[in-house]
Image (cartoon, rainbow, N blue to C red; front, side, top):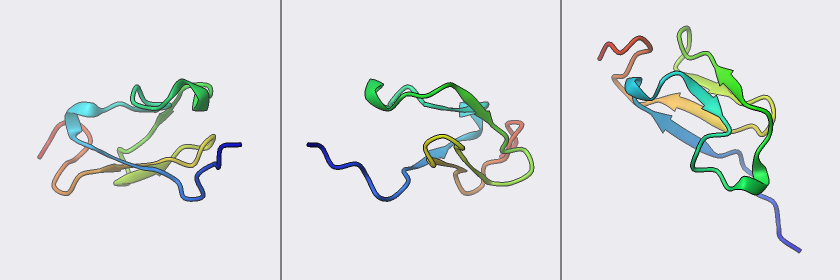
Length: 67
């Protein structure tokens, strides 16, 4: 039996990584769910409603490509 993680993962993004979506390409195939796009235009982070992964813009990054 494989233990499931208890804490949500954190993914830090640069402005050029937007639009943010989950599951992301680095996630193993066993944890895939329907793709959802996450809005980071009004806040610096968003949480996936399926798996709880938190997507956060790196310090100094802004949605829209401005630094």
